[in-house]
Image (cartoon, rainbow, N blue to C red; front, side):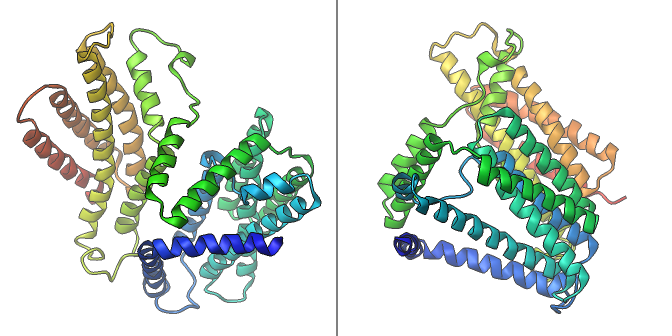
Length: 425
């Protein structure tokens, strides 16, 4: 029985590799490229070279972001198995053994990641620093698994709040790097949540079985390269997606209803989209503020690294603008087709502009802090970009035949504004 479970996973993996081998090779090449850059640029071509404190802090921030995704954003179960295993073996002793094996497998993966990171921090030398980072990261990363697993099954607000608070405290301890005290506190959290998971946690069987069945169906379609079925699964998933925020839950007034509608639409754009945006901003930061990409033709050139970083960041700004333009375009089209809105077009446009101003203010502060820009430059960029955004947004709402050339010119000017972030002191 246990061999059949492993055999089924291997068979599924074989089908995916057979049909998606170009993408797998691409990911492998990216991994090899990053490894080579770490070895040749960051570690100066020697495996015994330890990372600088700056790079160590960046890696710790990535670990914090990984656990933050697990605890706060991940909607699917972090511990998975075959849906048939859950259905047939849940009330037997075999299920507990399989679940224990899944816990152990998850622990091994996090231990391996902790060992690689600790080796990079210490230059792969058997010093006390290696052991300190290894035990701290292994406990912290596995704690993220336990917290994610607890939040997934729990329906009580107290448990979710406790998991969030535990994540925040453990993350602060990780970034503080308090040595033995940090390790002890982190493992106290991990032991407590391990006890809760193994002794007190009640499975949400309906939710868990439904998610496992969906995952099995999706994986099977991908393994068989059934494109029609994959499109159908994606459409059904989008239609059946649970919504947690609705207009009636907010203090609606005539003056703010469009603003709230814009907020809800933007939130429903999906976590993946915002993760991609954050990755673009982080990539721009790495290109401009670190030497990770040095030695690469064009991209690693000191003169051209600034333009590439600006382009990566401004793509986020422009894509958010296009998303908002699409939203208001859909709303105004419905209004022309007969949807009654008790407000003028001007009020609708300025409600979207107000939301965009708030969203871009948060984004601009984040980018300015990452790029180390002066406060007056951040404010200057924000003022100019919002001005161009208002012009572009009003042009979009006008039914003009030749508006596209003007919008392209505005986009080019908006990208050029990004150079304000990298103006030297």
